[in-house]
Length: 201
Image 1: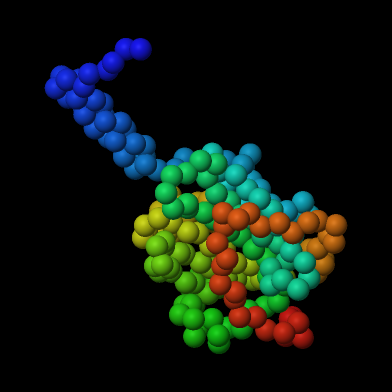
Image 2: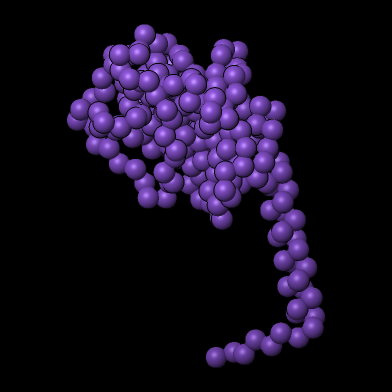
């Protein structure tokens, strides 16, 4: 068995290689995301809504039982990641949200895709959250992105992906045969205050 001796020249070479690797990683991370591609559009099988995932990210569709707040969720995350995970979550609510309670939770009236929405943005524990709740095609949706650092999301490379969201009118019920499964790596998101079913339009 050969013994590797870390002499000063060897240590210098390894140090230089380490700095080069870090530099390449930083350049890669700062290079930004490519434009969204339709071939990466994901969503539930009934076509109720969809969104384009970033390249090298994966999506999981979750069909929740009737007693859950969300009828359908699409969880999107990197296939490989190091450290705290960035993710995009798009959900269809069963009931309209309680607007007054959203305001109490610091949501602000704003716009998403040029239409009214309730917006929440800020630091949440160790990550930065941007979130929009809005109505489309007769249903209410929740679009959120979790990032490892604070960003001006509407002026970032993430924005074209978030605004690739599409929705269409669908029946109120979801397929009962679809299993509900939430990956353990995803955190439990805070519930959105909603009105009762009688409050729906």
